[in-house]
Amino acid sequence: MKPLTFNDELLCRRPPRGIDVDTTLSHFAIITILVEPEIARRHLHARFELDLIEVNGRECALVSLVPFVDQDFRFARIPWFQWQFGQTNYRMYATDTETGEHIAWFFGTSLDSWTVAVPRFFWKLPWHRAHIQFDCTYDAALQRYTTYRMQTTNSWADAEVELSDTGQPPTELAGFDDLETGLVLLTHPRKGYFYRRDGQLGSYSIWHDRLQTTVGHVQTARFDLLNTLGLAEPGEALNIHSVLMQQKTEFTIYLPPHRVK
Image (cartoon, rainbow, N blue to C red; front, side, top):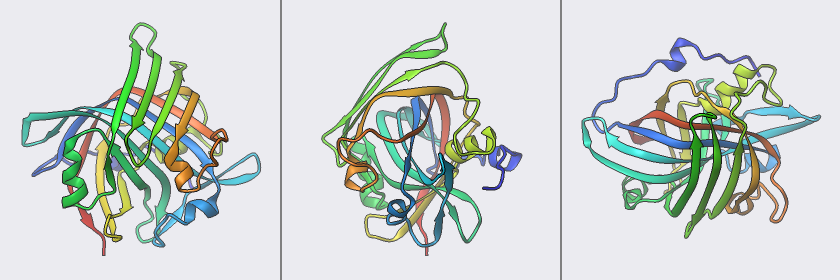
């Protein structure tokens, strides 16, 4: 993989307009696992190529489980209407063969709000209603979480996870020649693609500043969707690549999503 950097183009924010959304995300975590490329490819549109790394002599694809709480989901033009809800995104990493961009490929999203009806039915996004509970305690003096638990029930993707937080920034990421390349790939894909609920290819884009993450560790984890998709075996421990955590960050989501011809 060619080196990647947090350049000005990647960090430049396009001002929101129309129905674009600004939101503060809290309890943000990126839990990345290593999976077999052949299995991962089954779920990816032919336009894209998997981003692969080599770990312990094996070529692996990367899949991330990304839980967080939308604290104040709001349309940029009417910021006084706000919603708060838990969310978990399921994604893997690939390169767009038409543009050369590194993108996030979304399997789907769990969302704990009635507002999921809008993206699900009007835009055909693979988003699903769920009940999501967070039990998190952040120690400002220690600059780390002392408790981090998330549980999803009544969903297409039931899950539960408990993380520990070192409070220390990452110094390396396995399989990447340099730390910055790994951070750009895992934390900063600005475009997402997915199969819409009608089977067609869809896309939307986001912006956020460079994340200032700390290294976490998985204490316990169960993500049923991984078993459903064949990306993990039931009852077996997940092949964890990395856990990156951040207490709070700002996101802009450019809407509406569009259908890709």
